[in-house]
Length: 144
Length: 144
Image 1 (cartoon, rainbow over the protein chains, first blue to last red):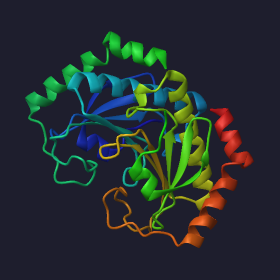
Image 2: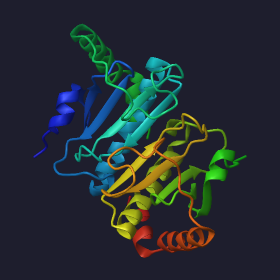
Image 3: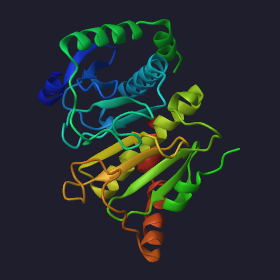
């Protein structure tokens, strides 16, 4: 049975569910940073998913990337699945700006997360929920 | 016209070509580390590829991951496309071991690359070339 890893649960807010993945917002206001977690039990590598699940993961990753790029006018989207600490398979999708806290370094292990206020978190989550129901998102997902 | 970025050229050895991607071996003996570069001009984000190219990129990424996992008995495969410094779209696929130089931190920006000797580089490249022509690789690629 799928259950969200405790550390992911502590560090994020649930934005919603896609067909395969739960969408999490990292509680770090330094970057708009989403994490997609396939709602599948006991998987830590992409290739441990079924072929259909793999296709869906890549499709959802690409579609979320497109939407984030547009929504935040990102200079670059960083996509990564690492999982050296949290074993549960999860895909990072991070909006990078040339003036962000750690540009051009990757975001992991750099400095200290700066949590959103409760109000910011709610507003941000609502904005993302709307984006993931937008025609742009639907189009990006269907077209892959 | 596709031309390999100068920095990628300096830091890697060309292992070979897949249908979409050029396969590069990072010249850093601390980790078996491949980089896939779609042979497409002027693309820096995954979603700038055509749909067919995106599917091919994910397929090749997964297949290379499977082969590396088996070949090196990896504890974890790290997959990432960042591109904050080198703009040309490229996908990192890194074999991670729990006793490697920077585990569990990501590999980027950690310490200094330790180049292979010319002989090691040649041997390693030959081993990888064989792996990318193995039945396991072909099967992983076809089945996605």
